[in-house]
Amino acid sequence: MSDNQTPSPRNTEESTQTLLSRLLMARGPGGQEDEVRAICLEELRRHCDEVWTDRAGNVIGLLKGREPDPDGKHAVRIMGHMDEIAMLVKRVEPDGTLRVVALGGANPVNFGVCPVDILGDAQTLPGVLSFGSMHATTGSPQGQDVMSGAVEWKDVHIITRHDPQTLQDMGVRPGTRVVLSQHWRTPFRVGDATAAHFLDDRAPVVAMLQAAEQLKRSPTELAHDTYFVFTTLEEESNAGAMYAAAHLPGDTTIAVEVGPVMSEYATRLSVDPIIDTGDQKGYYSRGVV
Image 1: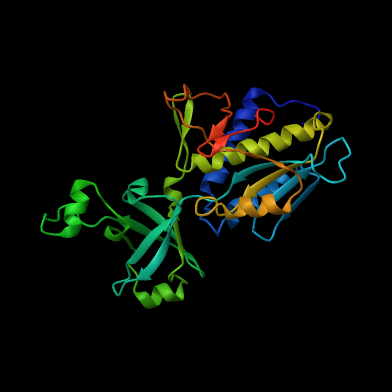
Image 2 (image 1 turned 90 degrees about the horizontal axis):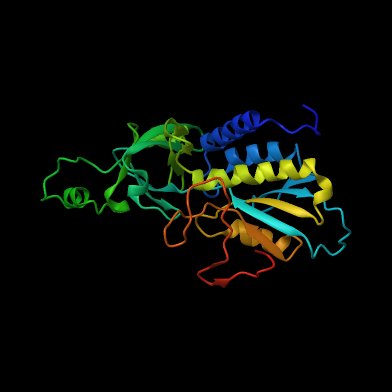
């Protein structure tokens, strides 16, 4: 297919699903987004004039605009994040189970009892996130928490079936990231929609990559330089986005995220974009909106 040809709707949908599936299978806990970063770099290199990774670990693709802007003050930065909510090993118990804490804003109920991937320094190994026995009596504090549904991170552990020395040899230690297993990351269809874990992270990344592709096909439509920024550590501190905003040209940043489907906002689940007019801190400039 030449650059001047527009892909058919069927091919566009197929390519979207393929890219989305690749990104969903890529594991990207905060501070260790290497698998997602590799896909973003690969895709951006096909469409952007310049592509690089900055010192914060953000992936950046630049599409140059048609109008001169020597100071870069008219440049626009479009940002979406690569990382996902995950877990962090707090300690390794004598029986080889792992105690974990949240990496990002998550409670144990966000994961449930599920298979996980433990991203050791030497190798990745499987585990199971467990709330303990569901048949514990009310005399057990954990039993009370589990049965009431008020499960906290202190109540959960990860079963590895390895002893501490073996885990150490695999590079599993305090600070090791733990993510939802690839076993549970495959997207599936629900009627006219796609369902999967981490769509709130990966769907905006797909939208940004496809926007870069479309702009590359119509370069005359782009007046000013546009930076596509795939950021790190958004779930914990938004550190990657803040670093990029401080170091890239331009005064306007557009964040790409999922929008809530709520009667409060009269929004609905559809292919139409949601453009926010404000957030908890205030309302946005009408010109930017």
